[in-house]
Picture 1 (tube, each protein chain N blue to C red):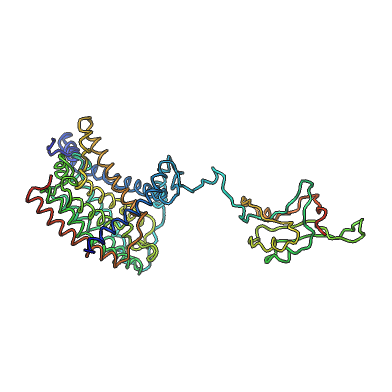
Picture 2: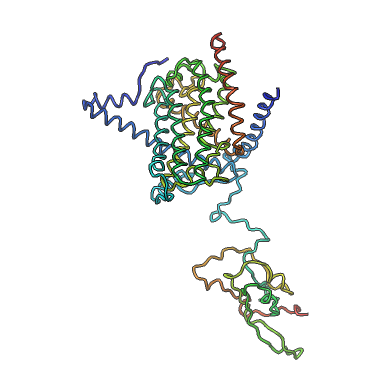
Amino acid sequence: MSYIGDILGGIKTLFTGMKVTGGYFFPNIISRKYVITRQYPDEPAIVFERFKGEVVMWHNENNEHRCTGCQACEIACPNGSIEIIWDRVLNPETGKKVKVIDKHIYHLGMCTMCNLCIQACPTNAIMWSTNFHNSTYDRSKLTKVLNKPGSKLMAGVEE
Amino acid sequence: MILTNFNYFANLIRYFSEGLGWGTGGEILGYIIVAAIYLAFFALAGLFLVYLERRVAAFFQLRLGPNRVGPWGLFQTIADALKLLTKELIGTDRKDKLLYHSAYYIVIIAALLSLSVIPFGHGFAAFDVNIGVFFISAVSSVGVLSILFGGWGSNNKYALIGGMRSGLQMISYELSAGLALLTIVLMAGTLQMSEIVLQQQTGWFIWRGHIPALIAFFIFIVAGTAESNRVPFDLPEGEAELGAGYHTEYSGMGFAWFFLAEFINMFIISAMGVTLFLGGWLSPWGITENLGAQWFWDLFWFFLKVFLMIFLMMWFRWTFPRVRIDQLLTLEWKYLLPIGLINIVLMAILVYFNLVF
């Protein structure tokens, strides 16, 4: 009698499957209960903390950053997305010449978000931002200067 | 109980030929108008069903589906159809031109012919012949030809495999579907669709025929899903292994006709099921019988029932995985066909001893 048993078992599994999918469908037409779509321009997008949008340099409220100009990120970058223009300035307290960054230039258009520069940074000066609104009509706008104008090195980073 | 043999479409044609006194010219005009009504219904129902499928699919898959064009995205498929109309028809090199181009006409003709005998309401059948059930079974198998033609004419191995699979599948499952229909014909004693519906005024056949009618209904749903090439029996298309099967090489409107016809075939299968098992245009327990505007209630109940049947088929589509070709044939030849044959004998015994309600 396994012939009829097979048929009944088959029908039972079909109903089990339909119960599962129906359990999602009917709440969805009534109240959009399980719908996970977000209609992005109308609703804000959910962006996760770990999302790698673009590289930014952290600044505190006194417009100070943590970049010592060691160029580890520039060397680590596999496709030359980072260029650092730097200078040596005499430190009046110690009487030594110290490297100071003038511009930390970041080419977002070339960046592959590989994370190597951030791993290479010894002072945690640069980090990921979750901003993804990066499209422009002009490619030159993708070249960014990460340190803010007039910013300087935070005290105590270099030790 | 109304058993008059009136027909809205026949009245329309008679109005043009005799009412206005235009003779044969008026009659031809009437036929053209009826044909235009059916073509418009074909296009609109097809587009609406495509929209419905996408929306239902979206809710099954926890999405929202098209909701931008028009209210609730209702005009999305119309926009898609307009886009397809403007697209260039690209075919393969060295295709069989006659077969390739005739394929999509045949699929429309088969669908429209089947549509013409289905009574949407009392007197709402263009072509209420006394062999309606037989006629539908006959012309819906013409649809196989279009798929075989498309598969062969495309000069593409995937299309050919898809077409062959489709031929195999539709010819096999037509047997079970036909047997399921015959079970009901045994009860009704007629092949005329409107007559079958009118006989259900004392109770729908799925209730009056109890066990064999219920089994026949299940067989009919399974076979109908297979005949309209839908998941879980969509081997002819088989996106994963065949590209898109028999319509791989069709683009623009050529593809759109196949696509629309697939949905219209689903509508026809559902309408057949509704007419034969679920009382056609009749309301459950006659609740709207004395409300007036009978034509409206006829259409309302008919389309509501068809909608529920179509929804059931969509539910199947988004629940069951696709069967393998050997499973497909096992299901038909080892299960559905023997059960259908036993079922028809059972029904004959019940009808002979008058054990149906």
